[in-house]
Amino acid sequence: MSKVGLWIVGSIGIDNIETFTEKRTDLLGGSVTYACAAASFFTGVGAVGVVGSDFPAAFLERYRHFGIDLAGLQTREGATFRWSGVYESDMINRRTLDTRLGVFADFSPELPETFRDAPFVLLGNIGPALQLHVLDQARGNPFVVVDTMDLWIRIARPELEKVIRRANLLTLNDAEARLLTGRYNLLECARTILSMGPQYVVIKKGEHGAMLCSKEGMALIPAFPVEQVIDPTGAGDCFAGAFMGFLARTRAARIDEPLLRRALLHGSVVASFGVEAFSTERLEHLLPAEIESRTDLLRKMCAV
Amino acid sequence: MSKVGLWIVGSIGIDNIETFTEKRTDLLGGSVTYACAAASFFTGVGAVGVVGSDFPAAFLERYRHFGIDLAGLQTREGATFRWSGVYESDMINRRTLDTRLGVFADFSPELPETFRDAPFVLLGNIGPALQLHVLDQARGNPFVVVDTMDLWIRIARPELEKVIRRANLLTLNDAEARLLTGRYNLLECARTILSMGPQYVVIKKGEHGAMLCSKEGMALIPAFPVEQVIDPTGAGDCFAGAFMGFLARTRAARIDEPLLRRALLHGSVVASFGVEAFSTERLEHLLPAEIESRTDLLRKMCAV
Image (cartoon, rainbow over all chains, first blue to last red):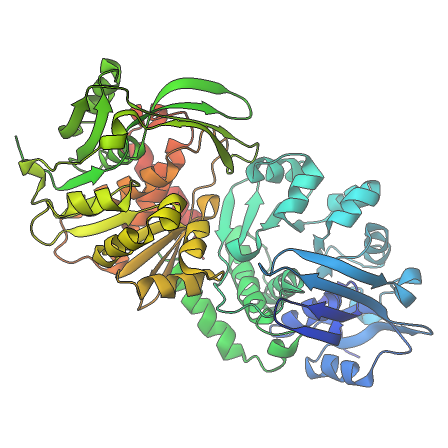
């Protein structure tokens, strides 16, 4: 088995999603799923996660369709993680209706030998203790991106701070940045987060794009204005996955801000495709040429 | 008296403003005030408005400081328009505590002879019937920008639709665009507004920037990330005023999208200075070189 340049750990789930216009059940979801699918447009990527014995073969087939390396996928006796949620008509705010951890409750991620030397690591949104556990299995000095969410900020702060200290880049949304830092102004949030260890922080603002901040300065990353958002689930994971995939593809000796900007722009574009359908359905028939053409269009929209 | 290239009609008021940290009374305010001050960095600008006999001489002095042509300023027996409001800690949502129309209740804007041939017109945020009344006094074929607000969408829709039909460009914020069109997605809002007559629509999204839309396409205009917002009052007026001032300065034979983008970027930058202090206090000692340097910085932040 060949070595991967990027691996991603996170959740794998089966989702029931209700939007203002549609209700869909038994969808392939989870942060690893979205992030790996998005990364696969740029690079070979390995998934680290767990599924239950009920996980449909058709979903494994989807991973294979994206060429995702499944050496890090554990199958355990029991039920796959399930999430049910409903979006408000703004397609931003959502309510969780039900969460069933299943085999995810005892998840202990193991890094396959072929993943251990990867120069790029995305610690997707799972508990920070698990993120640390799997990161400890990596060798060398990878570029580590950490994603997180409000839950961990609230209930696992000490572990989260440890992960953040080991991150090269932390990504989180505006509300989470405010929750983590107790600040309102996003520049102040960014400054506080940078003082916690990472070189970079990316604050995601949904349809309003994202901010990349370092001690040296700031970049504004636009979001592509999507005509019709069908399902925003996984947008942040697609963003992070595509951006890491882009970085991994360049094999750049040094990661600097101009490179990060280009990577984040591609993340933004892939995420904009992702929300055009449920689950990974849009990504399944997305062409690299479509990514390039939308990236060009977004660049043109921002040219001043 | 020499002719002006741009005139702006709107409200002139005395404001009491309360923010999370500060409370200020008797501030010079109103849409004309902010918009003319902002435009004055780029071009000669004429103000069309009304004040009461209580209007402080010091405020007239401020207009003169900005070089604003006051031929269109009426002084009437009675009290100047007064507005009192309080901002929430997010510095976005605000509540009106008190509005006293005073002489503004009977305002009938008259366009001085020296304003009538101006090639640029900004119909600031006042009732659409007044906007129409003053626009009818203009000659030639000026480039007309119309600003509006939720109040007029609710109570004066037929007149507002008439003004919109005569606008080259309509500017309004995201909530107002949704209220006007009954749509949620901003691209759909923009499309609906364009079908009402104007060639262009600019949807303002506060700290998230603005979208310029035409039938041909769209441009994303960034907002400059401000370290500390002291008072957001008048930000939209500064944006529109500076953008019109920039357009007027170019004396371009033809107004096209690339020119509008540059103008809007300057509007965004001047607005970002405006919110750094109460009233026009930051603009009073703002230097053209500061505008240029922040414009360059903002361009660099968006370069991808």
